[in-house]
Length: 295
Image (tube, rainbow, N blue to C red; front, side, top):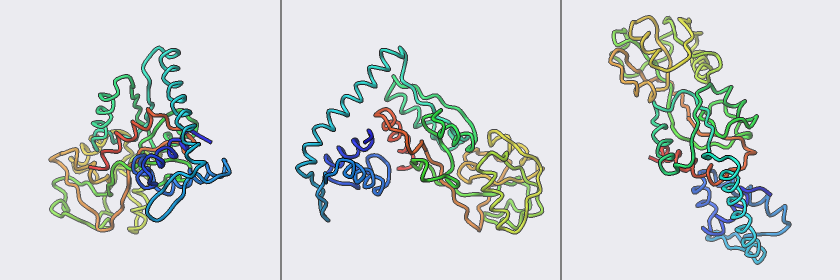
């Protein structure tokens, strides 16, 4: 039995709905169902009567509800006491992220969270997906923000934030610059700026080029903010593959962002270790940050 099972159980009991609980916690309905079924298996009793129209507590479920509420109150009070007495400082959330916060305006929602919960600080570190996944598995960090193309869905809980797609970025003076959409194969003779090998965008780009029938001719690897890449592109020295919304957010007049005929989609998501127990603080953070996806 874990804390999240108790939170899901109480929510389903209060809302009388698995789907509404899934919406409240920003997860799939099947995830809620699996947690409740595991709890029922552990207790050896049914907690809910399920019909097509409603979900109601069984007699055992009503009894267990009272105990679950007491356990959650005790758990949350314990966390507050430990933070106040032992830490002597603010609560904190450690967030590792690929370099997308400002481009997708995710940082705006982190600021909103900190304004709503001034006693909680969010410590942000930029890294690449491989390092973020390693830190999450080793429990060195609370949350990560990554692209989900190569996410092991069995190992991580995820909450989608932004959906985007791959695009070609060329100089405003490039021969293709008057086009709105191109086939990637039309760029096969260009020199490419690629992210470093640890970046998920590197693998996404290489797979796209492979499907288009060529291996990109490397101009350079460039690790860092997208503005560095666009500065080189403006000079007509190379082209690059970037996420379309991200590239458009830079608003450089010296480059043109071209959509691809062959759509390559990617979702940027907030993730955490599947086995991590989410506190009330964590859940409030998730709910606030995921509002960007609901806009």
